[in-house]
Image (cartoon, rainbow, N blue to C red; front, side, top):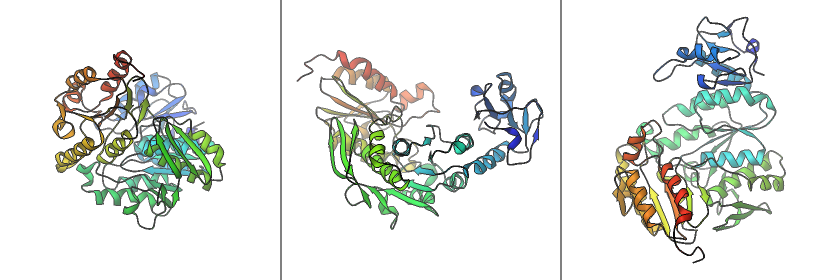
Length: 430
């Protein structure tokens, strides 16, 4: 329980405040078991929603307002982080994972191998703080995804999370508008490796000389005899066979990381490998949907390094290979060139290439201005046995109309493919 009477900072506690089981900064999630933290936002302060949280039955609210059930402090944000830092010390093992691509996949596999609690997709600093407060005392390892998009942010995250193991999955052009260059990205993300046990993926290894790597081939900790097929990935690690259904090389590399972490934590490798077989990453992250047309849903987000990895995985599958690519965001002044480079790579890896939105012509030979136009053309072109990769950035803050126009948020394309693919005419055995 989260007892407002036991917080590690000075506060004025309303006599009506009571313990909670969860914390949230979203007043819509507040309820009889979930306390509310009133934080400053880009548009409004959380104080504007304190009354709604109290009406929903929140056991207490962390705020600077003098209201019923208040845990009153001068600065709710700083109090939240102080509480998280104090609670984090109770966790037996914390693994922090960052990278330009593959963070969520690595997190999912690491958590399965370690039988750890892990961060949900939403990984802002307040979300991480709430996670640490809620779970550090559970006695289980914690796996925290630590993404950044501005200089100095990793230092803030490391100060909050204090990972026992820091992992960098990959380095590539992402969030260039704020971070400026790949060199800056490598330096900023490398902060997770300082003063702790560090591990880096083979793609990121050249940026961090001397840091131990994981993956295949020449990695410090390498899986062996990797075999990729339409059924998934198979390899061995330290003599233990590993089988990952519907997985590609990126997932196999994440599994190697997971097994390295498991071995160092004293976890049985055969047991960890068995759990890896059942890992399901969240929707939109290289999720393979077999059928008369195989759909690869990788539409959650995109960066040049992530798109290249997805295209490499596409080549391992039989059938006519189709790439459907949309805009990659936050690439700065070189975004057109970066889209052109990715499009050229797609033409090498796929039989048919589609592009949509602002850089449609750069991304695909079949270029469409909007998502609905692309979707109609793609569905009309489908053949039994096709394999379709769908990947783009999300543009979550954009309106649906702008997403359709700019070529982001291609989850609607995935939904249309899944709805239509079993009606594609032809012999499924061809």
